[in-house]
Amino acid sequence: MEKHIFSKTLKRSFWCFYDNLGFLIVLNVIASILSFTIFLCPFILMSFFYIARMVLMDEQEKISIKEYFKNLFNNFFRNSISVGLIAFFIFLVAYNVFFYSHAHFENKFFGLIFMGISVWALIIFTCAILYVLPLLECKDFYGIKNVSKAVIAGVLKFPFATLGVLVFLIAVNIVFVFSLVGAFILALAFNVLILVNFNFIIFNEIFHNQKSERMKLLDERNVLDIFKV
Image (cartoon, rainbow, N blue to C red; front, top):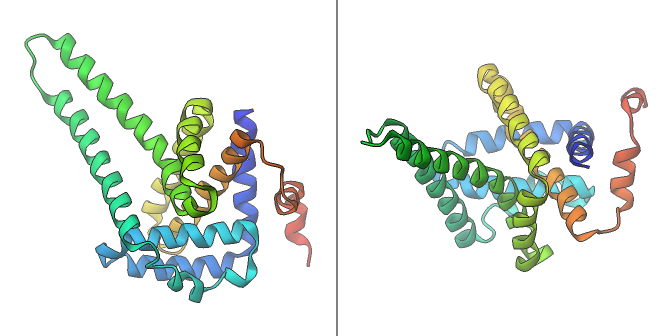
């Protein structure tokens, strides 16, 4: 089941990216330039999640640069607080890992226990973020109760699929960082599309939603479609 989720996430993300390649590259470049103004980063990210959801659902009238900027400052307060809290907790847990790995305890056993707890807390929290950010953008669409349930159930019910996506994104982003140009024109769009597709699949698995025609079309496509005019 979890292997099926991971492979389906990659397949749908590839076709979404392929169908909108030019638009997503332009949008990625715009977002990369805007991100140099650090305070805009939460809005850049959340607006990108909105556009990625429109790409997944094939809402062509909403897939535009104009729509991206229109949604850039939507939910200003909520996005600022949410992304800020997430960044703070990541820093806090990562600091604990660093602290306990370098602290000198009289009893080294206790030091190892605290470091182990911190490492697992960091892994679990990072996995939860894979759900929190994409679903936060969909809060008004799905409802806060369902979003909260999906975050908890996703981590607990599909741990291997979640870890698989996390490790995959880390590996791909290492490649993007070393390529520099790839990071500038592809990285954000690629990451966001993977997360949006993954969350959509997990949400449907948890709530047993019926597969839409759009999802069926994405699942039925194969590599030969690339050569079709």
